[in-house]
Image 1 (cartoon, helix red, strand yellow):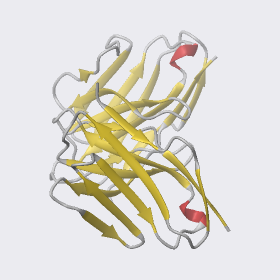
Image 2: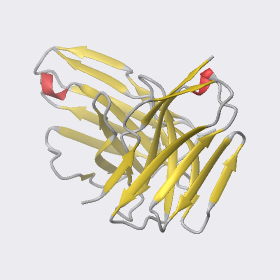
Image 3: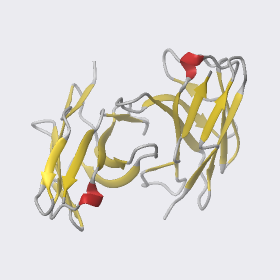
Length: 116
Length: 112
């Protein structure tokens, strides 16, 4: 089946560090990928839609300068949390939509980000 | 505002019984609804998609119904097993641009 690889799975770092998370579609092409954030016992909240070759679309309340998204190829999107602070600690999950259409979104296994 | 509600309490059932989970939504008419499974510390895994013109969809031990009048979907797992224990999420495309909005999920615990 369709596989989305997300890396790293866990990051622990000091406040002020920038952290990059990668999301790769392994066996399909994805013009569109999505980045979500999930707090404990809460639903996935969409942060932004990543579009290959163009700017990402951010949801209301999500700072684009804080959460930089790059989607340089049809199989890779990256999310960089810049100058991370403890309040950015969360579970970040990406998903990708297969370009072949009529497919559900396929999710990565998430990245647990802990800022000390 | 748009709302997606799932049973907030965990559902505890015995192995072999049928688990039924509920997803209710308001203020929208989605073209389709999806169900995902999420294990602790993992990303969601797609299970089933049901379209607005479908009343019921089945896949092995799973069954989903979709009542657009009641604005409700029911998700059933028959002959449940301890390995079915997980959180189950329903998701709708509320925006119309194929971006999903998720419910909070219902945790299912199947006891041996």
